[in-house]
Length: 219
Image 1 (spheres, rainbow, N blue to C red):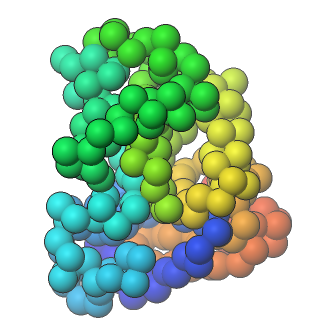
Image 2 (cartoon, rainbow, N blue to C red):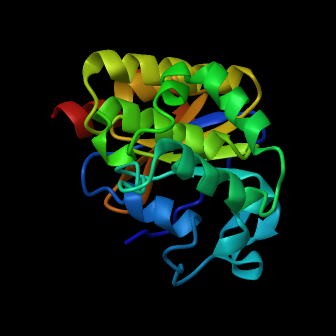
């Protein structure tokens, strides 16, 4: 359960939300995505109230989601998974091929695996497909929930390099993540969540040496 969470992300920022297991990070993601209705308060995305626009229209506002566990359709091909991401933003759109080329420049491996069944991919490949699916709609904002979960240290480094690149190119990112070290390397600012409450917020550099972060992760 979340309690009094007040979180703001300005255009162009890469903001991380940190917290150990059970802190409420996935609940926060689901609330922002409209999968859980807040008992109090409100969620505004791109200046619009989530209660007014409805969950089904979030993607059309320019928001891409990368859920925990990737949430690919395992029996469908990589290309079919990407098409679903495209159609969520541009139903009936005609530039899917162009979007696929754009995604392929960032994720050559995803293009190589376009005809492969998604459920047969490695964990790292699935993570890249999930991010590519969010990007194919050319989002202004990407909201990610625990993207490093289950990845090897090498793949985590590669993944966060891509996240950092997307941020430098102008995409606003909310990164909900347990891996504090990697998240704070790429973030401009961060929040620390514990037991459903924000217990600290600061610039990323300051949070790296924060006693709150140290106590939550290393005590």
